[in-house]
Image (cartoon, rainbow, N blue to C red; front, side):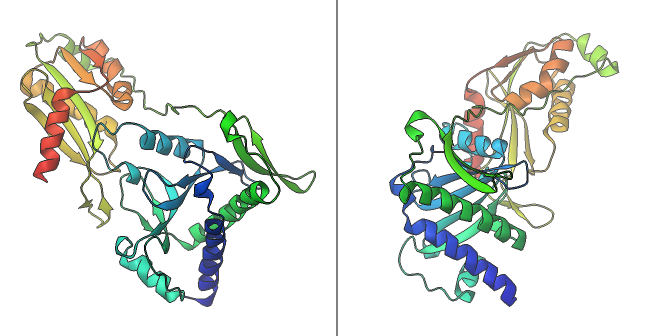
Length: 335
């Protein structure tokens, strides 16, 4: 580690420990929204003081509304699919952890910086989270970004603790900090910022008329129905590059019998649209055209609805899929 990089790490640790000394977890919940509008750029940085959801103290930093909203929706929703929910977010996160819960890399870094934490919840470490992957060490660019982000978060907290600013979280407001180039000043105020509960960033696939559509449309269905769903499994595999991943399971289960008609494991980078269409084609080739496909995922509805409508396969959206739930539980237990 160069002296320059060590100085950057020490600065980041210093500002983060300063935030920790304010003990914001005593006053703010995970639903309270802190936002910094990045100076000179059209991007917002959202902060969450993690506590109850991980039973430890931490700070999550999200770039953009979509990353923040997606992460909060996953954390607040009932985990019907038994997914490793906390790992399924795009964020830079620091946690005051226990010694046994930090990686060898984080332990070595903490020691190289000259720190000697003692006791539970004393081991502050920083990681990059990406949907579908185990957390990784942050880069030098991440260090620079987090230092600026946390310095502005600290200023928001000081406005509350030292200047008596009321963030008005009880009124549903968002504490927002931004820079006004005309006044050459930073402002921190509670604002009405309504974020959509669901960003609705789902794929919508439209299929043009082709030979496959004409062939399937002409088929008679043998009368079976399929529950179809995908989810990230709470197990760790390695991809071809050696990176630790949470694989995505795709399950197609016959509605009445519970028989597993198809089961696939995907890496996080595999594109779901092609997989879904290939799976549908395989089901039709092996079992005939289903009369109904039951799903509980908006992505799958966006991918399959148009094609299924054009070949007279009914698509039904359900809150939960009982046969898939059983099959998924069996799959996880087998691993």
